[in-house]
Amino acid sequence: MSKRLIVLLAGVLALAIAAAGCGSSDDSTDTDTASADVTITKAQLIAQGDAICKQGNEEIEDGFERYAEENDIPKNQEPSNKQGVEIVETVLVPNLTTQAELIRGLGAPEGDEEEVEELVDSLDEAIESAEEEPEALFNEDTDPFGDVNQQAQDYGFSECGEE
Image 1: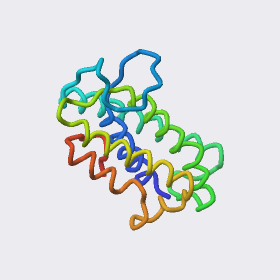
Image 2: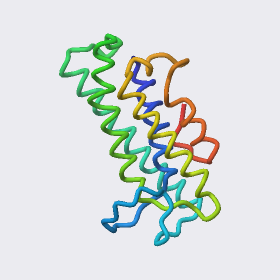
Image 3: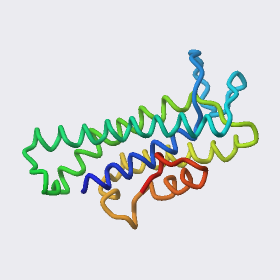
Image 4: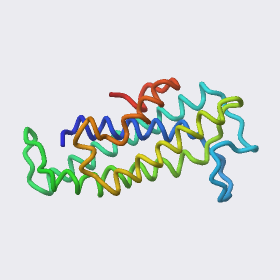
């Protein structure tokens, strides 16, 4: 699995997560993406989401590089499928899950609640698919993040969902 694919997947997932909204600091366990206490514009959501995606992509790239170094994978060599699965399980999925949790606290812009909810739900489904079948990420035809990446780009994100 190439670094480009990992970064692409991370960007898509991060975008989807960012579209879920930027959150309040309360300790509420409410899982709705739209919060009555938070008002966010679409521009703010996109800016904050893209910042989250950019940081997440950097963390995933750093994690990939650490994994490659710890496992003696030369810079010009792709990891084996087994190593790729381990990267998905130990680097990609945990990072994207954390991003989703952080973004879940964000509010959705008024009028966009349903679209943002769909985006976040798609992200959750993609993460679950990646956990259940990490090998699917190695094939563009079965990549569980393909649709959510497109949704993020269609919503207006540039860092998130970037291909």
